[in-house]
Image (tube, rainbow, N blue to C red; front, top):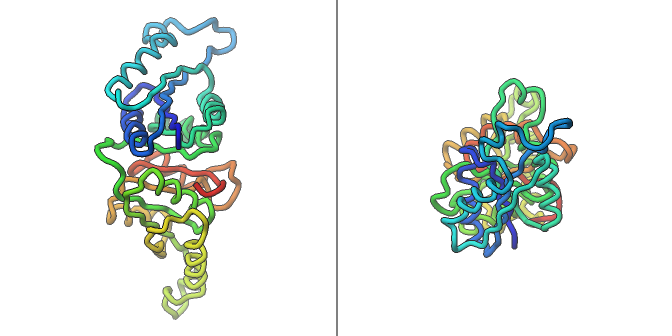
Length: 281
């Protein structure tokens, strides 16, 4: 990761993006490209609106705000850039052209009604960008110390753990798999721990641990019976990780987001690393 892109909307939602990116840049010896994207004028509207101008949304003024934000990190090589385009288009093009290895972004702007009807801007960005995306919204007081991977035993989850190990080289690595039992086995007289479904999950876990990219220091993933939300909530409370690593989907269409991934992006319990299918990180 020679270059990390930090995307900020210059609001409190992305207040910790640059701080976390600077900490990662020091750790990895990387450069930083600090980016703010402004939406282009609507068709038929000449230039920026008066309201936008009053808010200091001229590109030159925005660049000055970015430079001011970067000033406290004089020991980090930070370049500032303002782009006028749709966020997902601008960032996917920028990541591809620069070859950046990681995109760091903040929380999405919550719109309760619209969020039910369409993808959020952050979700569109994640689907458009090929590189891993880190949602950084916790105060970056220290490097990541505890990583939890939400795994389905897929290559994408192995890649997520691989990338997590790169950005958190000193962290303890944990993983958990939520196993939903078929109704026939729930009602069976045998113990769930010795059921056919559990046996298959254990075999998948063994194969998963041999996949390329799975960190050497990974504690063998726990297999816990229950729904994904329930299992992850319990483990998050117990472990207290400062980074959650997961794939975009569960082996289905890579152009979509899994429901659990979307839920974690919209209300992340901690910083979240989202990784798409691809070669090991």
